[in-house]
Length: 391
Image 1 (tube, one colour):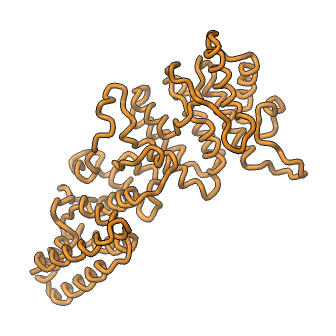
Image 2: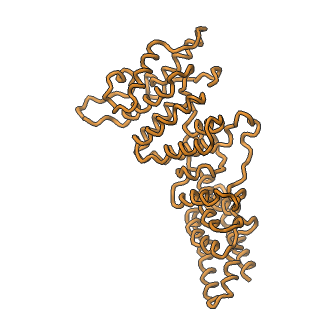
Image 3: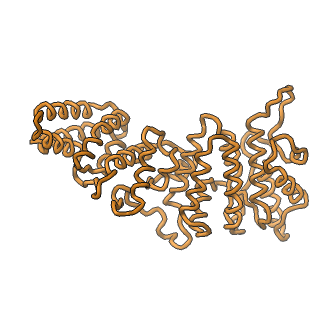
């Protein structure tokens, strides 16, 4: 960690006392600002030893940790500990493992778990596959205790690579894990991990450059192509950004503040849906099913023309035209995606491609109030394309 970028630590709104990991960072920073050799006080050093002793201990059972807790225990006679107290206990034990033998504070505000794993990957301390395997294991934990076990194996790797972590943010994420806030936590990790604005040390000048979508760069001859498509298909019907297996294939651009919050944006939802549809469309084909310029109208029109040669061609063509007409009346992007899922298996079976850049744009703008005429323009174009391709 770079000593020149010491964390700016302050109590959050509504708290009168810093969390212990924030106190540790301020303790070190105060020594530095006073012109002394930056070091941790005896109180911090003694408390860190107590934290490491709390690893794998049940919250509230280690008397030596009570002085470093900041979440109060209510005196209501209830045997069940508050969720925030349990989350703080686990955060303290993880911080103790991470800070152990580190000469600088490892609490780094604004460095989420996804960002830390991205930096770990780029440090080349581990291979990309190894980092993603550990991040995915954490993201797929069924409950808080399982998540903590995975993080206990991850934070020492961050320490060895000199990478810090925002422990105040982690505390909030652990507190939300077993509740409805988990999806937002997952989305923030995934968005941070795929952030194109976080530069690699050797190519900082390239930060933020556009990366081609997965369907553009997909190589059917890649030995791992089948596994990649299976990972993308696993996201069908799941909330965008929450499927860890899909994270390496996202190319979404988003403001860092939105990434850190795990915001569910139209761009992310459109890319998620396009990726899952492409994976279903592409499977078993030895040529890329992304066909630039071929709108859904063109693709379904080609399908109708192909069906016209069958024995029940007239009925099949009429059925396709009827279903495509229903697609054109979609009220929003979710309904549009639902109708597209009907056609994709038919296009896959017929070997007919589709422009996934165009599809993503349509899913992004179909019901966007900032583009009120987008759906109308797409309907007219796709309807025209259908009649041209089918005739």
